[in-house]
Length: 319
Image (cartoon, rainbow, N blue to C red; front, side, top):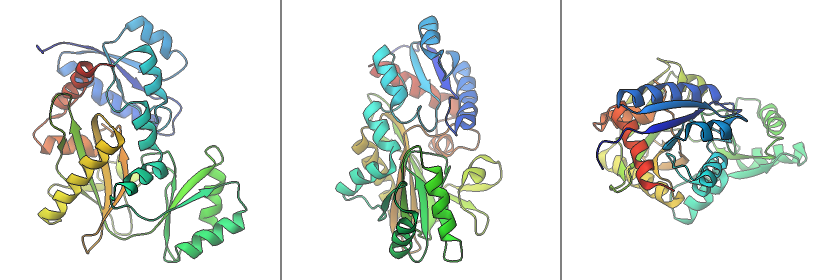
């Protein structure tokens, strides 16, 4: 295809607790689109979206969205109805990727390395829930909302922490979804691998990134989006064979979920090089501190060219 200049609708914001991250991603994406000669239209994810899409008639949409409803298949299904091509996985794959428990069922069925877990229903007797979690994970555990990103709502509970309070807080904060997931606390390196899946080209893993934070901290929301609060190591302090395994798993997870264009798989790697696949992000962040564009740059693709590749991939693929 000749170098085609596209009219790209960049969806941003919305009601998600990650809306501010979305806006930061959208600003970066819009700048990159202008650099490559595309026309960008910033469209807030609100009740005027149908009217604005009909008004502007974009060639393709970049959903610069994080968390529900932008990343869980809701927006994707809406765009399918309107027959507008968009970057990223479709309704079905997005919905599965966003639900940590269901995604792990898919990975476990394919023998990918995931941690054991408990699915907790928040309307059960709190005393029963507390006992069930502590009995199952006496050495510490991690509580995760089913369908949030950016580590929002994630709690790491060690033996010295007030486990009962953390569980009660999670029960109260999960009333809307009714469920959350609990996994054992595992000490290890936080690692991520991006996947680039451009239409008509071979699916490619990006370089492995190891994430380091201050002692006794982890890659939570603050450390993700505050400059200087984390360090991203490329190459990581991992063996070549471990890096290859991580990249192979990322490709397989991406394909199992049926994702398109891009994804980012997060892991823990223990000191014995044991790998635990934590989750797959179907719309990785594109902020100045985000991991996916950093990995793409290390792979030889700068940010404007990355965004150009993604929107053209979605446009060529169509609906």
